[in-house]
Image (cartoon, rainbow, N blue to C red; front, top):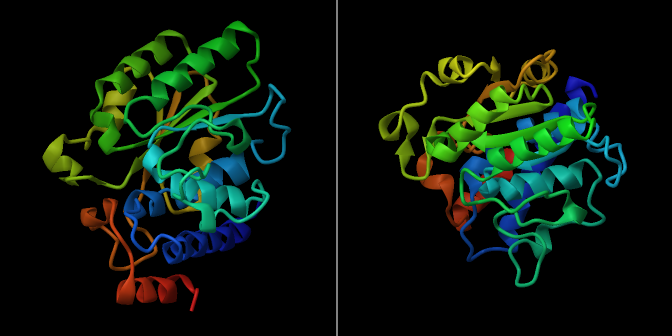
Length: 271
């Protein structure tokens, strides 16, 4: 897919995301961390993998594990933009009984391979899937796993990192949404991730840093030839696309209504 098409799709995805606020006026929504990974999700689902064009029952279909399950809003919007949902999700988002939950819940129809949200679950699960594929000779399939940089505080991730290199999982790609903020502040003040690239390299991973809102940069990183596990550290902006949300950790989870909702709609082109 062309970069121009992907950029237009990213604009549409942000419109879909903001439109959700009309149906969830009293709900807290994970805006910041969802907006930061729009281009990452579009790159994986709509560009570098076969997720959107291979039958869901086909064992050759690549898999995406979203460990930062609080980015569910972005995931649903990207699925819809890529034509992978039968109808719009916005009216059903967070409603009782809806399959469009606030955090990702296992659902084969939505290609959600495991429930996430409690951080540190996705990468170990992805490593297990990659090992299984290796043992079954299904080497053609790629396993992608998206984590947040705040999530890299979790020890379970580092156990998975060590195991992945020990098992030579060249079918596994880790993507870190490196927006520099987490629920309660700056990642560098809570538990520094400034040397994340060196840490992963020390565990014998192939590491590439990318601009997380630039499709060419993401494509270059995600399509690197693998002879070992690959980690793409995608530098992003929390709340990307909404000026008053950008680089403000208070928008990790917050209600959006009134004048700020009006302003957000104007900024994404809904008004």
